Length: 605
Image (cartoon, rainbow, N blue to C red; front, side, top):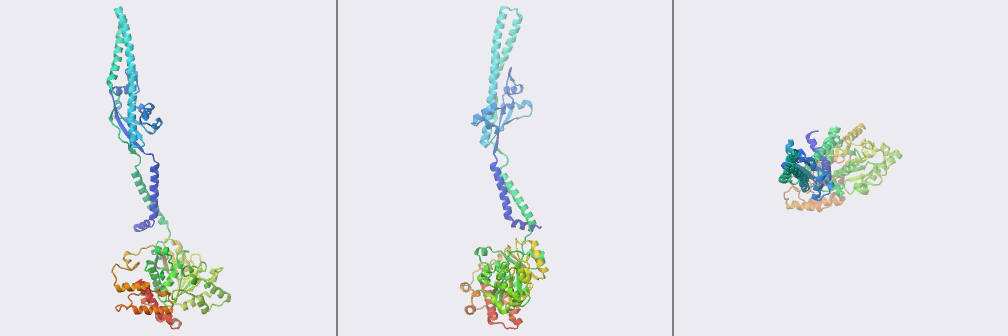
């Protein structure tokens, strides 16, 4: 796959890529919504010298105290902190309180402590850190007060002992034992009084050196998460699109037709959504200049070049149902009739006839089925009069329809009747071009039976719908049955017309102000009736009126005519010389004048 093909595949499946991106972003958004936000805040405190010594020895004087760092996360500290911030004690489990010494040596660990706490918001984390530091300080102050009480009790004890020993010494100065006990009691009393003095002079056990700040968000940032989801969705979407494209066997455009089958591509017909919304299934009957109408005219011109000179029979078939072969058959027949040709449109799809959806009741009633059944029963080909009697004239000049008729029990057996060739040859002699709308060809033999009596088959495939493998199989089936495949048509093409052609489609204005006479002529033409829908007398009157009111361009009398209207083929020049008859006024002179006028009207509208 080339880089250009990859870009084309990505663009064609852009909706899939967008869907994957939206899904990825939605999953990220749900994750962020369900995620409990966590903020962390820290505060740094410094221990007093007394508290630092007590944290190392576990004693103040002779009293045991708890100055260990692990007591920061003890219930005694955390419960008081929770009460201070107005939260239940059970909520402290989510605070995730930790502590760490600022320095690495054991001695310095007891001097500077960093206390960290979490919260569901930045302010909550800050309050938790401050509350834990305050509660821990109060806890240490309680431990210090306990040590002071113990020292004071020792001092009172040794004071009483010293007084007792002093009385003994006063009574008997030679009592050495009393003198030794007195000295020991005085020393112990001095030590106890020193402890009390140290506690009184030490101050608060903790001093805040770095107050807690609003907490910082922990975890994945919403912006980062959404950005990652967007990038991941884009990459995954492109990957899925390219993999899907690699395994997609559907027809891309008309460039694939000839490369796959070796059969020439006759052209492509654009997908016209506005026509679908309007329900206008015969765009060739209108005067609008659209890419679809131009594609139909281009297909008609291509077939005129490829078909042998004379009266021709063309079978239109498709790969699968729904490819648009009846739509193309109907509009191609109408486009040919607009050039002044005598056209017969045959409902060759005996299984699911659909011409009535385009032409109404004139495409219903007895038709090909009845002719074939009569021929099979009598073993005699129907006469030209019988065949002509089965033709129904449409409101479009030059276009007649041979309906499919009633549904037979076995269409394939009925089409295999050898008199089918006589019927088609008779229709060929009655008209300039016969177009047969036949069933799809992949799994049904009807199209081959009809095409065996024609000049060839035109196979219709639908862009982004027809499978390439089935297209190749259909072509092989037709050629294997000895049917010449004239070419392939890509229907529902999405290829855009260059902007430089906008002046030729739509309004038909190139941006320059047209002369007043031309604008009046356009208004008169738009208000005039469609020549295709006039009978013979009305057609002649309308033609004469238009010829009298419009002065031809002397420099180029046919400058406004379509190429196929300006240059009729050899069969037009000869008239009906192939059958040995001279063309009638209706089918020769009037027909060619009508074709030229209709082509000019198409160009002006």
